[in-house]
Every structure is written in structure tokens, then in C-alpha cells.
Length: 160
Image (tube, rainbow, N blue to C red; front, side, top):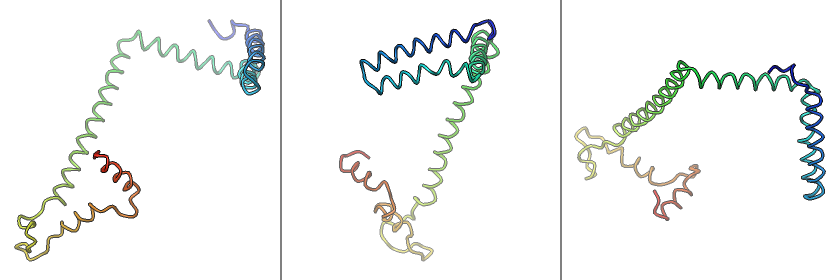
């Protein structure tokens, strides 16, 4: 059925009339706000016809129906849907692996301390242990940290 085969003006006017009657009932039973909202909804079919938006809505609906029909009945489209799903899974897996790689790199840079770091003695190269103050800074929340209050609450509740 095409757009021009339907008598749109009587259909839209009828929908508006039915909607206006229901809006009147809503006004009587539930009050002014319900009646006004029902009237607003009731005016939309006639407004869509008069502005020409109904033809656009018909075209969008027709395109959506033909897309879904082609999707359901076409094996090549289903192959495309399967490839799209596989692509999404690969994106998520690669993101998870990348996150693990980055966390390992951070741990290997800042987390590996010299063997004598626990004693507080200088290392063989004569430099001080630099990782210890960093650990203390990480343990104390900064004033700029927005989540420090939330972290404290979670720690008090035993959730970490």
C-alpha cells in the first residue's frame, strides 16, 4: 500500500476527534493537567497531516519495515549481523587486554622496589628509595580528590 492510497485527512481528523473526546473525559476525571496533556496528544495527528510531516513519517516507517523484512529474510544480512557482533566482541576483548597491559606497565615502573627497600638502607647505586614516599602519598587522600569521602565510607563498611 502506498501513501497516496489512504485517505489521510479523514483518518487524522477522526483520530483527533477521538483523542479530544478522551481528553475531555480525562479532564473531567483526573483534572486539568491530564486533560491538557490528552488534548496535546490528540492534536498531533491532524498537525502531522497539515504540516506534511505525515508523508515523512510514512517514508521513515516504510524504510524501517523494508529494512527489517530484508534483515529477517536475507542470509547475507545475517552474516553481516554476525560479523558486527564479532567485531564488537573483539573491541571489548582488546580493550580489556590493553587495560591489563597498561596496569602491568604501571606496576613494573612504580611498583618494583629494590631488594633492600624494606631496610631503609641506600641501594648499591647510592640513591635513596624513591618508591616509599610515593606509596605514602597514595595512601593519604589529597584535598583535590573528589572520591576520597566515598572511599572512606566504603572502607568503613568493609567494601573495597
